[in-house]
Image 1 (cartoon, rainbow, N blue to C red):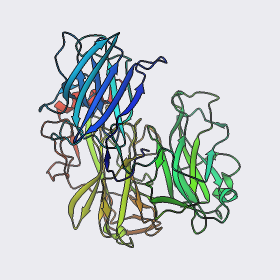
Image 2 (cartoon, helix red, strand yellow; image 1 turned 180 degrees about the vertical axis):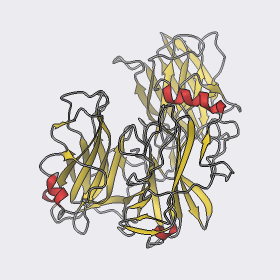
Image 3 (cartoon, helix red, strand yellow; image 1 turned 120 degrees about the horizontal axis):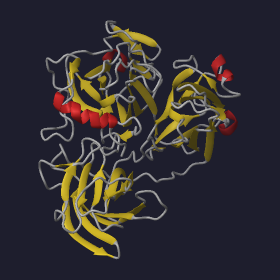
Image 4 (spheres, rainbow, N blue to C red; image 1 turned 120 degrees about the vertical axis):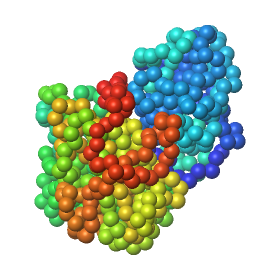
Length: 540
């Protein structure tokens, strides 16, 4: 989960980061930036005599599709900087409007090229350029030995860079009194493709009768071995249930929706990062909370059926005895228990929407502040959004992802002032496309699909509960709200569709405009070719 969950006040100071492109152990790409008024001055040093590229990724994913890219070509190439954008894993396209990247100087010396560029922190072209946010920012980098832009091969990478700091940026290591590692002990991963395993942890011996606030939670997950954790969820548990005792001595296979869940404390999926709370917000642990008895639910993938696979993944929680002003928690909406029944057919763009309606949000005791959001789908996901609807009118997107990547699932800080009021409607939207020969069902496996959103917010109470959404019926007039059912339609099939994606010349952020299109529609032929690259292209 991405950190930097704070309000910003810009500070001018040069910040540098070193990167390795193409493997090896030597730094061959250095990025230094400094804020100058309303633009950032970018100094690039790359070990090449050819072209050099830098991209600002979509902050909810971070891969090449959706990136705003500047490329400086070598001698004999196009002079200045090329203003490009990528919508597929292929050669980036020229922007319809120029001016997103500014060129100042280029000097070659000793096998290195030194380049100075500029870029405004707020773009005038929101359809194909990206703003530069403060704090850690997802970037892509690439270079080549040829003068003109060609395929980069292995000389590329993804990473983060802080383009400019702020007066109130959260520290990388907030002060804490206690660090607790919660990990499974040499769990043997079964040879089947999908396994859900649960492990219980008792924090009471560590924190006793003293209330603490979690100020940071970090994943301790091993990936890239041909098997491993697809996602994990940390739940508060009622110690009186048999489930807590069952999973206390050793991790054991479990299913989604076991009886021990009280509410979600934290979650991680592929591509996720540390969660660092704002300086005035903490997650409560100790007396008068359920957060001393925890269960971690692990979703393991073993598609190759590797035998003898062993895992020791988990999470690390950083706790402080100094209590903060606000106490936060997660609200899980959309199809939180994976109850949706309609499958996704091949070769057709399929859009589903789930409402957490006013019958549930009316139970909020007052306005809540949104800290950040995390959208979740699987491999056939194409796009997604979390919308706020107030008094029957679209108000804002609390979250969007135009270029979904199952391997890069990011927790994204909310815009300043994002607020949910009692009686608001929260609409989770997922758009899918695949080229399999059979339908893809909704279910627990990575080869299945999901559609849900997680909202980190404060103040946090356990009423109306921590889940809200589908009960699996397309005709029911009620939906799940906490542990009860309330009136309202959970699945919305009203013919609306997503607006143009970022990268289209006419794309502008906004609500879902109503159209006469059905909820399941043939995908346009012009988009089909692009989607072939999205599904089958090389991972950047």
